[in-house]
Amino acid sequence: MDENTMIEQLEGLIKGFGVNIRYEAIKQDEDSVKVIGGLCLLKGAYVLIINSKAAIRDKIKALGMALKHFDHENIYMLPVLRELLDGIPEQERFNPIDNEKLKDFY
Image 1 (spheres, helix red, strand yellow):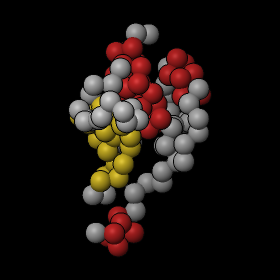
Image 2 (cartoon, one colour; image 1 turned 135 degrees about the vertical axis):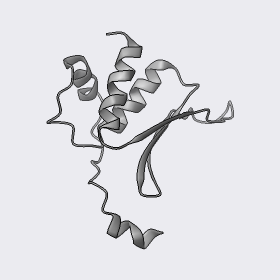
Image 3 (cartoon, one colour; image 1 turned 90 degrees about the horizontal axis):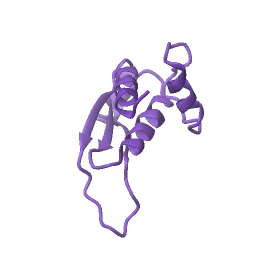
């Protein structure tokens, strides 16, 4: 599977969890740590921000790391994607958003 197809497949899986994916240029100094992006909770909704200038392999890694936060075990995915996820360290899983609890934060 080529890398662009892999990105499309991973994006589809992540969007299935209600995650909005945004590709944005992340301004960085040459001396700083390379930022690829990450998953965050913004106004009660999950958003995955990925550096649009990152290498394609780094984008795949960011998508895979974000997907590992969700319960993806019972979702069908191509074996190559399952192998990719197996190679990424475990992430803390998110529970579905409880809007009542989030009201305390806003």
